[in-house]
Length: 368
Length: 127
Image: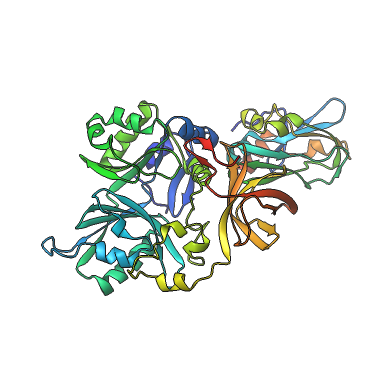
């Protein structure tokens, strides 16, 4: 039995095509994936991301003054939570195994010194809870983990996204108008974060599940287009953002997944996986590809031939913004932007140009 | 399901129209285009190529997946529809109005043996 979000009935009633995504029955599109993609690049679209899991990290007892989650997270995450100096600030990080393999990627929110929140992927949520639970038992037993399945999460994305949210939630405007990217603020029952997975401006909003249906319908009435996971995937690919399980997993480390910028190896703190990363000599990298030849669409698992050895496409699709096929691919480290490589598409070698992602940001092509 | 009564079908989601000159015209069904979603790439066989019945001879790719298209009957390719190669989304808009290619069948009676509309609806319901 697939799991259902608080918006499941609305997706079904809207005639969405549904798919199994990490054990959840989720909308892939509501008619046209490409129209939904363009709505986010040009106006405003919204995604039900309630399948992702918010996990709160707090002291078991409020009075236990000194130790909120900060010290624990300093040692648990590859990025450094000491970058979170102001309440509401968010940070992208990998959660690593001792050997440097990527258990998951997540966003950590610093809400208060005694309240941190992680938002993790749907398909890895159970694994993450078990991992974090064991780590807390060993290192910080004064903390507790609370999975927040009582919350719904809706991402509203696009150049008009913030205006549309304020039209629906005028009371939240004052609190969220001055919000900078990668910051969040609580406005009544809504936790509003200026984050996203599309390469556009917008908000990701966590709210009580009981309010989700009304909020979704009000956004729709305000001109926000309902978008499925299909458009979410082409948008994040154009934005050069990794998808866990596809572009990285436990078999690779962040340094060979285009995620070095999210790993803090300079501070003296120790964290799970640090020793392995310091000892690593990455022979592979995650690069962008733009298909030059006609003859098909780049797809994950296609083999890549380069002057420095073989590689593989990890995520490939058609880019609606660029009207051509693009991909992320794991390639030998010596391959450089501008190189021409060949991708095996149905036994034909098609030429592709290596680029540094992202492909698109804020509606504009970055590759020509 | 949009399945015109005057066409023949394959269980692999191709439609077939028998023309008065003995040739056939073929494309993919409305059910197929709906399942695939927005089409972004179409590759058609070379004119003059001889096809066996059931042979993979064309490819349609949507944003999310690639799918082979199979020859409904044996025959020789007479013409291909370049308009759908240039604009694959035409097939999403009207799957029966936008054919993929025309065949001269090897055996004149073969097309008549394909599924009728009711047979296709039953077959598509099971897949």
